[in-house]
Image 1 (cartoon, rainbow, N blue to C red):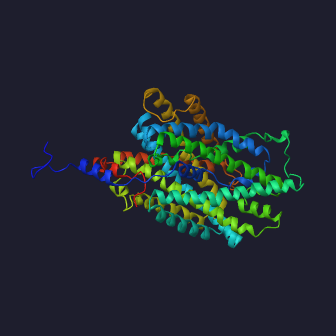
Image 2: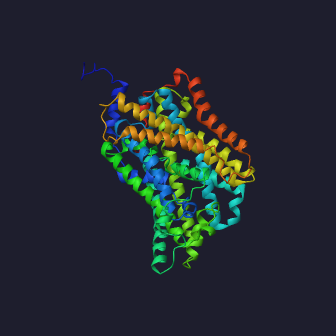
Image 3: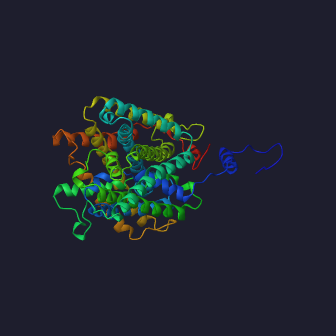
Length: 493
């Protein structure tokens, strides 16, 4: 091969790409930052007042789902991420098939279409509690807040992964860790002053009262509190030593998630009697009542703004994760048209985010036309989880099969008792999907058939029909496997 002189052959496209990659400095994030991103996408104080109603039994209601869902999901994802980069698509594609891999990453992505309106609906209600509580039930106000914050999030995400990582970590610290610590410290001070706990703290109250199907729904619904632990695996290549650092980030995230969920709920139960806690009034009412006991009600609006920061940080994490995984498979296999495969100058899949935003905006506008905002919130939340559970079912089956078909494939971490973890996680996901068709008390229409039809329709259309149409209509010209190498693994601007 000629290497010098005027007759030198021009470099190939691959050689040019490799040369550019070698000259481009790699920007990494630390495993602690990734742990914060994982925690931010999962943990929240939103459920603390609801779980505080159960007093000491809240520990049981969080620990059991953690054992049968959080632990399997986290350990299985840690093994897969340490062996195969690319997130759930790569895992399911290698373990089962490429079409099922697309279905998995689509469900992870598509659930956010419903997740953002429900999450930002909570943000709107929380902000209303700070400025004017009457606005919380105003559908037009809620719709405006959802649209403005979502598109602001798209603008922030367009600046790259490192920007998102910094903001989501800050949101977690300011809006979740600090408020959680305040709740726990004030609760301890309350008891230290000689006050009696509002909720019994003896061993006879460790378990919740059994009330049949309602108790089962309560336990299974808490499975979904832990959904999203695997989502940030698409950022595994932004770590310097993915094989060791991703499992480390996952274990730290598990600890943080459990602390954030359990301790604030128990602390609230020390101060506020269960019959004074509303299941539907939201976390702000709980903070207000909590602070009133100490004469520091002026902290309520400040905590409200901090909680909003946490929710926005979590939204940014979700914007950065699933859409990036979808972009990779769209380019490699041509499952989506070229328009949705384009990157902006910072190497971010902005067109996917914009397309998603159009549908998110349309759903947000429903808040302006549905009289009962609470019913809309709960129905969207249920559809969100149902679509997401399809991905988990595929994830556990793929992980089990990969351990059998590729036992010698290099893995930085091997989950102990993987077979048991996958069986338990799969069973928990199936149980959660079945329970999802049981109408909650928040569904005020009273028609079980209508509820099942809405949830089943949302699951079938968004989770199955749309990805099938993408597969059916795709064209050979949509494949850009060489362009998939241009998808950044770190910050590009």
